Length: 431
Ligand code: ADP
Image (cartoon, rainbow, N blue to C red):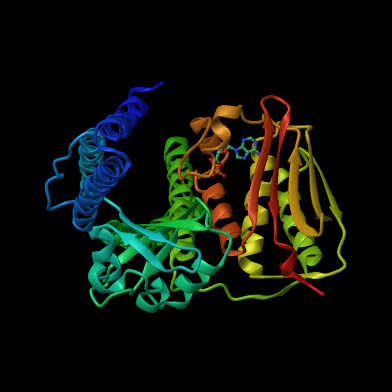
């Protein structure tokens, strides 16, 4: 029998034996009376402890644990131990929570926890600054009451949240935020915000600077170019050396002119105030033109074939598409040795219109492919220069693709050739 039951039965057995003894000495009435009084006293003791326990339970934090006797002493001491452990655990949880709060407060990004209905559950101080929140009042509010821009509301409602959203004018102080949503748990989402105002300012300055410098260089270059050409055409040529110098000068000024032109094209494409003017473009007509120019550029050194399926037109900007297509074609020509083949294809793949240029040229090693669209990134600098490249062609193509929501895909094998494709969204087909 366990210690508890031994102690529990000790008093009733003792009372029973005492009453039996009393029966033998003083008769049944005295025994019954003593047994009854003994039981009542036992019950009163339990009730007294129960009342003390109840009193303590009403405010366990502020009161000391009551003293107990007998079985109650043991129960109270165990309860006391339990509450002490609980206090310790709570203190540890609070310390961990405080540490988490300090860590999230130190994060260089704003963090808001949103529930499945986009209500704010928690936010760190930086997020409060970014969205103008006040955690005392705004917990439980829908975030779209506080940040109402349509693009933000659309971003929250949409499924496509892998790309961050750039949010301008959320507050009066012209703060520019980069926003990202991360889903976790059951329907919960983390809204991460980063202040990119300074970064955007520097980026705008950089763009303006490049555009301005290119503009400034254009006029003197045109003048010098003009003079060089005039001198080259003059019948009185003093020496072969002068002629050679003039030829080289002409080549270099032409190179600089195309560099400046490409820089200007890029800064125009980057400028958000320059929206895409869309029209229904007859791609086959456009490809005939681009194909003719390419044959001139190739000058019979390559076989250039067009494979076009033209039922519908494409919604887009003709000049930009022309620039993208001819950039890709001119690359294929420049990076394919004499005798190679170039296939230009315009087709529907899985409902999406795709433009692709396949060449049997020098190809690109895998480690370079991801970087080809960076400005001035060239695998072989001197080959690019020799063939009149500026190192900006694919950066221009990528920008044009982005403006048309198209994807530039590159597949290449060194020494065997490459395929550069532009995959347009199906919605761009004009039926
Ligand atoms: P570039 O004026 O140097 O051609 P681009 O931006 O058009 O500049 O291309 C960047 C680099 O990508 C090129 O220097 C070249 O190394 C590589 N490249 C582009 N197209 C091809 C191609 N069809 N075949 C092989 N390499 C290519």
